[in-house]
Length: 211
Length: 211
DNA sequence: TGCGACTGAATGACGGTTCATTCACCCGAG
DNA sequence: CTCGGGTGAATGAACCGTCATTCAGTCGCA
Image (cartoon, rainbow over all chains, first blue to last red; front, side):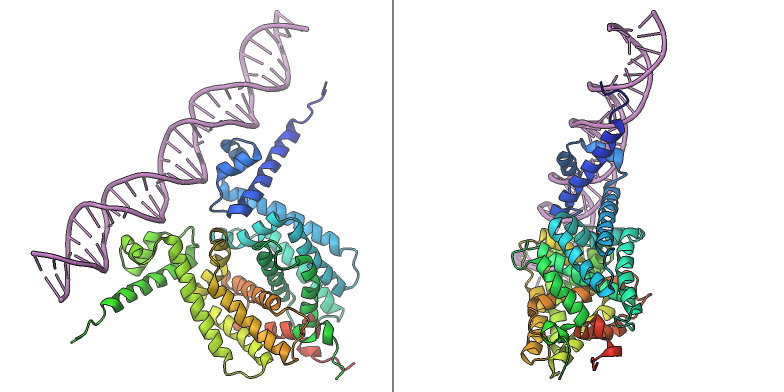
């Protein structure tokens, strides 16, 4: 049976996805430069040449992977903060959601965290729109908080966003390099939120100076 | 003149230094993998083979460069905070000194910031003692502040140190990728200090809640 | 003259990319 | 229903450029 062309197109899209999945894990394990195209092909269950039917080059494969995964991350974060009303809670939720993603999908995190930097070298011209969107999203939460008078308005929101991303990224990296041996990254999320909001001087212990 | 063996050893040491300098700039410009040993040799004014008289391999060259520069950074930071008495001022000074180093020696910063990550891949076994010392130094400042009651003691100092490094590193990276077009990284140091100490909620504008 | 630092052309491995070939499937004609 | 020509996705072995590394020889000094 299978009357009207069942999944010729479906199979094609499926294969592209399989290659991206394989690339995600191989890049995560070895890094972009040490990763072998032939290993990606083997893991995806396709021939070496097939990869070049879907991607122009190894570089293009990395960029496509990047866009694909970053798009998912952005969507997940947008969904997480959408139902929250207060900007401060949005910020805390954003942080928790990001670090939860890292814990749940370490190989995605590895690619984003490590490859983002090294590729900034040979991708100088590639403007990286998905990552820019990530930063914009975070900056918007901060700007909201500033507009609502909950956050210090003297700090430029885009720079604050970068700083926060720096914390998240570094935590992700150190956690990835020792796979959760030393600390629970999701639990860490809450005091990172506290640290960023109240500062080192004003943690839970001395939240408001009543002195 | 030059009675007792003037610079046979000195000349050797000098050549080693020249190679490290050249490697610093070439790695900074192209990244480790795209960097060519022959370009480093040319820039250092030595033959390709000479490099292998001083370093076991290209990997070894990167590691040696790393240790050399990180050692300098650690020394500069230690010197900067040594005369400061109060832990909070030490922390501010540390942050300012680090970002000043980035601005003054961008190629060192580039190597430390970018290559540290990508090399974490093929250097899994290399424990990176200098970077560990950097973190220890920063954590010590925080622990001092906690002991003095100036900083929230509920935050583990090593984790706070990592978070702060994350901010510094991300700021350095974004500045390096657009060479100071967008912001003055040294000026940024002061509000980063404020952000980390007082938090987003308590910037200069609302420093102490008297409410 | 002897020694060892230095040289740089030669080497060999390596891996991204190509492309001649295969073959599973479709479709129209008989 | 069946046969056979056509199609193009998929294959994977081979190609070819690209370096890291080596080593036979040079040079300058003691």
